Image (cartoon, rainbow, N blue to C red; front, side, top):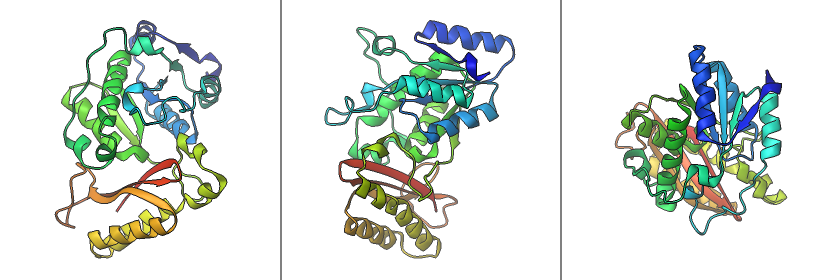
Length: 283
């Protein structure tokens, strides 16, 4: 029941609770977050409840995935409000560790990646990012020992990185991708959307609109290179500064060698003012 939601702070108590559920033959789903929860996160909880008997949500702002120039200190921390949202959503356990619980004194191990993590997309502009993500996610997977883990497709490269990492390291947690949750105007929900000014928020949906137009052109047989260039030009004219807008093979994120590839994905990251927006859609 929602009113029985508990918050735990240590790996020991997290494992004890999940083990108790396992002894009762209950399946568990993990929803890793950095807090500042919105409806996109709550959709992950909803899908976790559909998939498993119990849902564990983690709240931890992971410093290892922030570069010195990025917004670690400014990242919103709203644990009390987050817990109330999770209680209403029906989650069963919140794991909200302190920094030293996750990274004790002398911690010196990290996960090193290749494959989707070196696709020349997010990694090109944030080279530190996925090693930090993979390290904390591996720790959470191992600490919780859940049957499933729910990740949003909005962070599509991250989804592919985490899926490959779990498979390569034989971590017995099945990674499940959940479709992106959007506002009525198409903007993908993100904790960083709150950084947008009113004028920027009105412009922001153009990113998703542009991806739709590029995808339609590619499906119609037009040149991928020219379609992406036109999309970047449209965004620039609207005031965006684009890091990348690329069509890639969906499974591996490798460059497209032939349009006969079975599944393609268009991915983009673009700045609007001081806010970096990312999005992707199937082609």
